[in-house]
Amino acid sequence: MYLISIYFDEKTNRRIQQYIDKVAECTGNTFMLDGSVPPHITISAFETQNEKAVIDALERAVARLRQGTLEWASVGQFFPYVIFLIPVLNEYLHEISAIVNDELSNTNGIKISPYYRPFQWLPHTTIAKKLTKEQMQTAFEVLQNSFGMFEGEVVRIGLAKPNPHHDIATWELR
Image 1 (tube, rainbow, N blue to C red):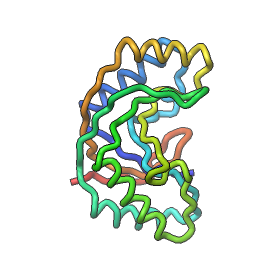
Image 2: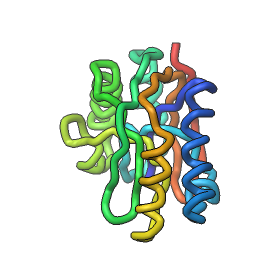
Image 3: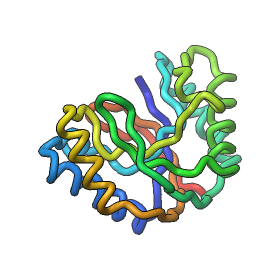
Image 4: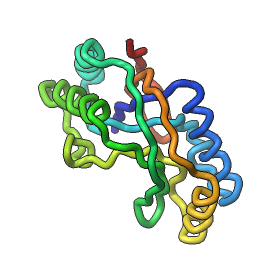
């Protein structure tokens, strides 16, 4: 499995990381910390045997992408194990998803997950995963007491392998 994700400016990273750290501290679930998972939003998930073709496709996509602003508006859950922050799906976020998925779709040997295609995708920034029922309740309470809407800048895009997180290539957006 490969992931293409967008990454944020330092101020936004610090804010999201504080949520990750606080939930880990209060629940005892350190999956995100143990896996060195940085604050991000995954744009695409896929299988391939041709990493070079993916990098070439991303080079083409990056030439069409730019930095932009997102606003995180709420907290959500994928039952039973994941809690996340929800960004507003604005034109900028949709455009990044569409451009990246268009380039990947036009590249041989890539099988894109249906959960990450435009109009089939729920953008999210994971705060904790692999939570027990009790940890989920605690995580929700922590975020209920600390989360407030905020804006952040998307400044980078990258190709990574998950579990643990490992960057293969990253590009600064202009």
